[in-house]
Figure (cartoon, rainbow over the protein chains, first blue to last red):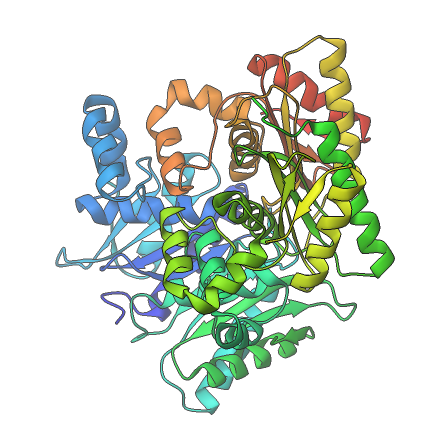
Length: 144
Length: 144
Length: 144
Length: 144
């Protein structure tokens, strides 16, 4: 069963994220919205987004869910504790992408509802779109 | 690069497939639309659709692309040549789901443009929704 | 190092196999020529041959090398001893495709030089093209 | 279905790349040409090219397609963001080889048509042969 994020909420998040990308004139993006159990609710790949982008977007979202905060935290850890991030790749079966752009979706009370992963432009721009999407749904973005 | 199927076409296919499912009062579905290279363009999981449905929907679509026709063909082969279908699971790294509901998307000229995989109800109902989606986009469904 | 089959020999085999296919008016084929160590020397996928065909062609050739005779033998075993063929899929890491069309390449003295795997039409037609290719190179085909 | 690159184009690219290698007196090479969906169209391993070269050549080509530019970009990222390149290995199931020699094939309009991966000599020489092959086919090489 879908946990935490309804498909309609995922639609709102994704549409708002892609509108933000259009405003910023970004490269083609791929957006993945995962529920609190780490399972995909919605994935969209824009025309021209390269073939491994679905895995990268999902890997950012899974990374955020894996450690309970956005992947900016994992990106920082990759410098200070690379052995931890390597190990996380291992125990996850290679599912984690530890760069910014994986953002945890929280309720106002702080509950984890799911995560958004975006890829295609710079990691900072990817993350800005994820935040815009989450806030458009009236939810709280945790970038890490 | 997205190949064969634009995101806007995938949106049309998915929406029409889910409208068909609502008409038929089916259980919650997951729909995956893959491009001709086997890479996801759009994936939607309806509320209540169970956690492995994204992999099953994608596996039906990949199965259709793998052999160049809908998965009804693979389903029939699973009875007459089970060792072939088992082997296809092996060489694909376990990516194939050989039951109806994986439908090849063809142009009017017969070119392979991508595939739709649907799961959640009976395989026959899943397939009927895939066909409805493809035809709503003015394209040709190849069920196998 | 390439073992048993020079690239020039693999070219001869592949060209002759595809000429045979054109004569018989077959569907688009994929041809893999592997050396005696099971490593690819030459792989060609004709326009319109579906996306998993490289793995299927290679899997037929590996199947032939795995048991030291053509995959027609494995296809027969799949009926009489399915547990053996299943186990072979397992120990090979899912690399074996046990249907006709994987043909061992032997010297006149009977030495194993490599194998050809072909897929795209019926298994019998695939195999006929592999035999034509091997014989065009003055070598001996072992279908199993 | 083969997407973007016909077998005849792949033949032109491969032959020209190997002629360039002969001119430069390089070590034995393996050349892989993949279509825009990441599926092999043509693979050739020259006599004396070692046994894992098919996987390395393919891995360079897949790396280029994964991120939408040549693997020189991935090679640079491996120094500045090693955790990203490690993660890309993970999410791709270990399919990526992030060193120069994976070159994206573009049309004059900039569309991604496929990728060439070459291995066997230095990465710079491998890449030079890939570029020579792509240009011989009247197409545009994107090294990253």
